[in-house]
Image (cartoon, rainbow, N blue to C red; front, side):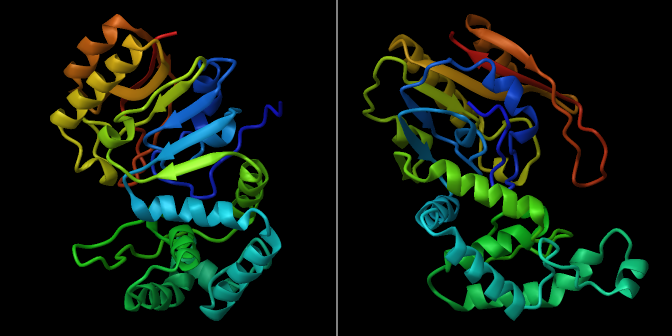
Length: 301
């Protein structure tokens, strides 16, 4: 098996790319069905060999982009032609192909010239999405790549409201897309978009099935954690206990400490399982300072 770690082409918040090798080494060596109720950008499943993948995320737009990319895995050339057409139409930067940003702009805005250059075109593209009642998944993907922190965010009225980011459609994006297309093509992958409780409801597991969980972290301050509370945390830990009673192997990524806060519920619960310290080096988007985090991977095998 190729030991190179693949990164999701969504570059999503909470991406496990930097620690993938650490956590993968703690996963079972043989996996039948792979379950991931909080798939996010998908970096983890892209590095797992299994017979079938059951992937879920409560964010329907995120799941629809995954489905869209998988559909395009049979014809990547056509996908890239469509991407190029949008990028050129809205005059966005495209360093994977050529550098079109004027030297004077780079000189004036040394650290933010991508955002300065792409702001107008990105705004028009965002307006295009918000005028249509049905989201175009190709345009949503382009907005994600050029958007702030590479997130998907909508306001109460369903309008995409993320500002432009200081990012670009570069060679890393192209490589990640090609790796994604290569991996998913021909694989048995099932996607759904449910609350994790609904995802687990009524499931039957086979020998060597494996569940990986990377939920929102109760004590962190990320945008996508704001709807997660102690009730959700308790219900999730109870669901994992149910998996263990059924002898299903699992691994849970989480944090016990975050910038002075402690997750006492998790700390008490994890004592009955194996907990491994994960060396992470997360940087705050707000002030570029290293976050004080204690990250763990909790397993029953």
